[in-house]
Length: 278
Image 1: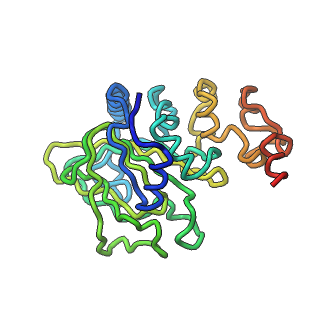
Image 2 (image 1 turned 90 degrees about the horizontal axis):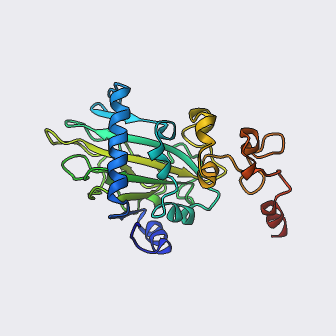
């Protein structure tokens, strides 16, 4: 079982500072499974650095993890993380993407940015994204721990990628999770070690009415998606948001997938009726 503060307390702290670190949130056995699975997937794909300032010059990135191993299915619905995300967004939130980031020695700092960079609403604005960064190895300032600017989710504009920022390193032991408001300014640090790889996974969520960063419908084969839990299918967009958004010919995407357990008719669901009564 995971341990940690009450989810509502964490939501409040996140609203105040723009970030929270949950130490020891992930059970060690799961940390080991995920770490081994990522290193295996990376080796099989002969992954190489992508060579740009965002993705890194000495970093191995692996996207679309749900399609690459059963162990990754445990992450989006984890009991230490999802209740906090639902408190920040709502229970209709979507999985925006899952990315393994294995930062190697010699990596340079990533430009400071918010994850909701493409959102055009005036800033500051209510959260439309929430990012969880899972530490599968220790995160230290020396090996490139994420740099965070506290309170920056309330700033009125966007950061100057080349500017100076008053940041702190989000140092945390393996098994911890860094939670970020999507508007919080942050960026990967510099890995100044000679032999340490800093492995983490970004599990990002967005509001149910937003377009996710990674396309789960096409990225995850239907035969894999059919084995997902109900909640994971919902997070991948196979249910209707507020009983309306995301339908296919008036039916939930799960019906098209052949999963009648999440069958729902648009405009006729109990959730839609609840909205009409407001």
